[in-house]
Image (cartoon, rainbow, N blue to C red; front, side, top):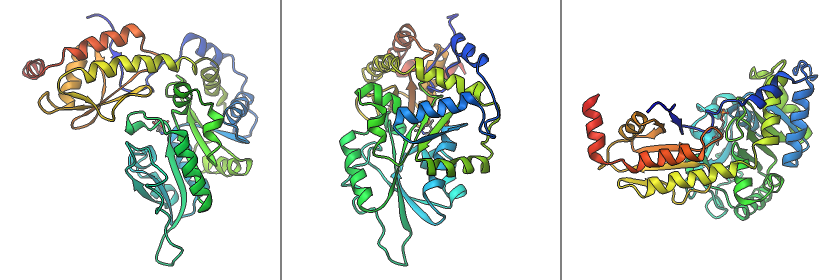
Length: 355
Ligand SMILES: *Cc1c(COP(=O)(O)O)cnc(C)c1O
């Protein structure tokens, strides 16, 4: 057991490769707050083109890109419509309330995938008693929903409805490129239904840091102001933007390997007694798993896997998540699947006794 642990906790754990680091050291730099870092500007142009938007703003994190999107579309006291399992609602420290003074009306969706029918009544009446509904928020792929892809026909239906009610649309596309590769539908095609779209370079694409928000020139002017306000103005940011450009040029198509590898893990989990795929068939690179109490707790299962060289995330008392990414090979995943298939209550009990 001398091999390093296989880290399936998140697709954010990847390290830059030698080629990516070379691109970073060779980047032409300026001061991006002054608007003269050519590497950042080129990344913004490339990202806006990818998504078919007028402009993009490079951001330190996906959370900041999302929070700024909320700020761009709303004023304090407004409400946004989203799935209760959305990253923006669940995992951004209540930022919509704190930064923008906005409330959320949440819907369950089908593992976070909202439908036009479910949200048909979501717009509050134009009456002094009610908050102003302003923004519809979708997430594709939907992380907490098992990495599910939001079907494009459903997005089109929601967009028509939003347009009829004069609501803005934002897409949290942290893993949009996973949906692009899994479906063959180009990024632009997904993005056209939204006023703004955020994407992460630091998830499956493998850059060490960074995200972007895209939209109209006017919206991005406001986004740039909010980024400065939040302390996200960066100086020689080309050094990290070069990694994001490298990721867009080299690491998109290979997401298909992550999806194929996730299927191997999904089979291992679903064919092991006491484990079940939380949201049904796996569609991209995330594998969310329910642990039956007959097997143990999520923490016990994770501890067992760890003791056998496989790291997963514990995301609930009985929930674990495994992600595939650039830094896990087919061989790593097959090894992990073998470890998963050995899980049985007696082994977990034995482990608990050892500790
Ligand atoms: C990871 C993630 C983000 C942003 O994450 P950062 O860690 O702040 O870059 C946003 N949305 C979704 C769906 C994510 O999975």
